[in-house]
Length: 323
Ligand SMILES: [Zn+2]
Image 1 (cartoon, protein in one colour):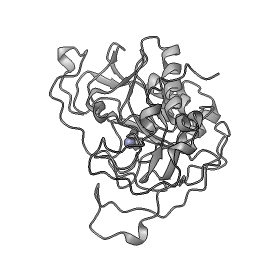
Image 2 (cartoon, rainbow, N blue to C red; image 1 turned 90 degrees about the horizontal axis):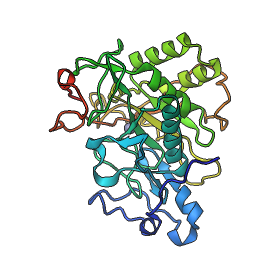
Image 3 (tube, rainbow, N blue to C red; image 1 turned 45 degrees about the vertical axis):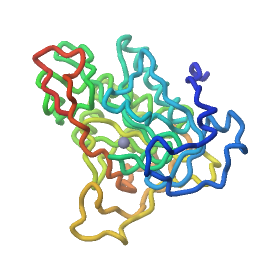
Image 4 (spheres, rainbow, N blue to C red; image 1 turned 135 degrees about the vertical axis):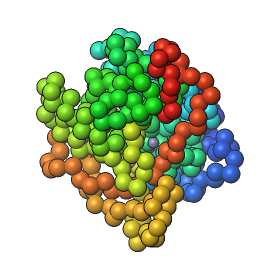
């Protein structure tokens, strides 16, 4: 039932678990597992060590581009496209699912983790192979998909903040969310998104008669993070620790006791105590209760670098993008 296996040409490269691609970003943890102790399948599956904000990734799978999946150009550098196999294949499966319903649809992916995991510039998390950024589907007034070179900010009314004529694509974005939260192999624990867009998507799902169980599940994981950028230009998806993965830490450590007044900000954001219970392992089980408060602060994604070229495939009337 698996999709075509993602190209995994980097097994040999992964054997070294090099972190050299990002000089100076040494991992905070040193694993006790060694490459030699992992067979090819285990190496491809990967092992998440530590938490999303303080951890690293042993082995894992590289996300490959496909006709239905592209890496957003401004995030293509430095090969930040590694993750646990369930995360990477989940993104691929979700993109395929959107494509099945909308034959021209292309899912736009930003950063996952770098090879070996560890710190990445402009991200608080993304360290342990369980996080990925996915750009929103963007459409023109006529309904055609637009493929900008970077993420695009949206208001709750569905209009792009800096791009007249570009709109939040409710149908494709909901289908993507639906695919992610019902994935059979990975369990999504968080899907960060700005509150107005969360409301917009859930409202759309209700309007089209999406199954209640899926809407409940989406409502549980779609959340605007606190103390971070609101995520009004992309989804940030996080999966839970796979069962029986020792060393994988579900949530970032609470920082409340270390919070210092006046340090609210991307690098000094306060954090809340951990209040979310461990997620269910069954992706299809409707949540038993209302969405829990966010357990942590991703504090990531400082503004993307200013693109030096206009978005691709845009009519001239809608090329004023500042994502
Ligand atoms: Zn992210």
